[in-house]
Amino acid sequence: MDIILLAAGNSTRFQNSLPSGQKRQKKQFVRISGRSLIALCVDNLASCDVINKIMLVLPAAIDDDEMAEIDRLVLRYPNRLFTTIGGNERPDSVKNGLDALEQLTDISDFVAIHDCARPFVTEEILQRLFDALASKPDSGVLPVLEIADTVKKQDDSGITTIDRRQLYRAQTPQCFLRREYRRALAEAEQADNLSAMTDDCSLYERTGRDITAVQGDRGLEKITTAHDLAALSYLKIHQEQMMWEYATGTGYDVHKFDPNADTPLIICGIETDHDCGVDAHSDGDVGLHALCDAICGAMADGDIGSHFPPSDDRWKDTSSDHFLRYIIDRVKAASAELVQLDVTIICERPKIGPYRDQMRGRIAEICEIDIRRVSVKATTSEQLGFTGRKEGIAAMASASVRRPALSYTEG
Image 1 (cartoon, rainbow, N blue to C red):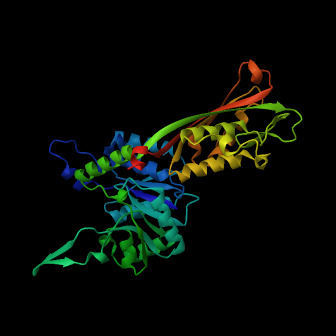
Image 2 (image 1 turned 60 degrees about the vertical axis):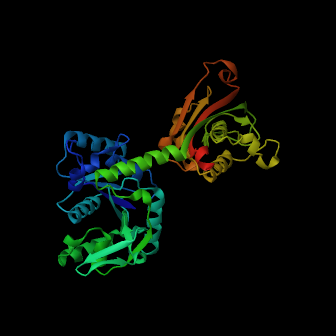
């Protein structure tokens, strides 16, 4: 699914809400913990597997510092993040974003439209929207939240209470089959209905199309005023501090070379071109074995030997992919996630350089994380010791994880 990220507004309500004397700036460039709303939103979207290309719609007037930040973001996400200029009103900006998106190659059939003023978008909400759209592609899909407060209506006859059970607050992203959205847009333009469009699903409403709602997310609250910014900043920063902690573990493994081994030398899940294998109970992958121990260490969850004893014949000649996937499943079961993995291979031969990116890619695939979170390095022991004499191979690894804080999980 591609996404059009709207950041072209003039921030009038936000700027009018700022205290007297405070520097005026566009809402999309104000910062939470040192990061602008645009950067937060782009980083969150780019981390989601369900998102393909991001079309960022910017204001026509932008200063040099703001443009420099946009340029850095584009360099950070080559072939994923693109920019265009918005229009005078929201419908104009959406149309400009769609026009620019359709100039790209390899775009998706589905498109989402999202407000930069809702920076804390998550993979969970995007997947929920994508699944709903995939099952009903002719429908517009949006996240909604129930209204908790009692709702009143005032007119000439006085104040009356409205039944809130049929009322919802609409959020973004709102998602569509791109070709169907194009048709609805053309129909609304022909009927001169675009000016009344306050969100994107209202376009579907006015052209008689179906809308499907999914459960929204409190973290998607919109930042409209300076008070909203302060409240959401406080909530997010303190929620992170309260709920999460970071831990690091290390691992080490070594195997002796065996010129009579009938299996190839496997390192970090990749078969290498070497004249001998290793003496091992499983496939002897020192890289993945060390990595398993590092992750276990970060999670305080034993070691690879406690989960897969070498005395157990079930694991004889088993691919180490199996061991690592098992460890990753335990990480997920604990509601934790991997932050960074680092493996160092110690050997004289084979040369690791030609295989480095394949190894990173294989680890990322097994662990289901971005390859940018995986490092593979190599060194020799300067012909000293058993690795220097080419008698064997060793690996060291470290793993950083984010996991629920003990103080939080214990209440």
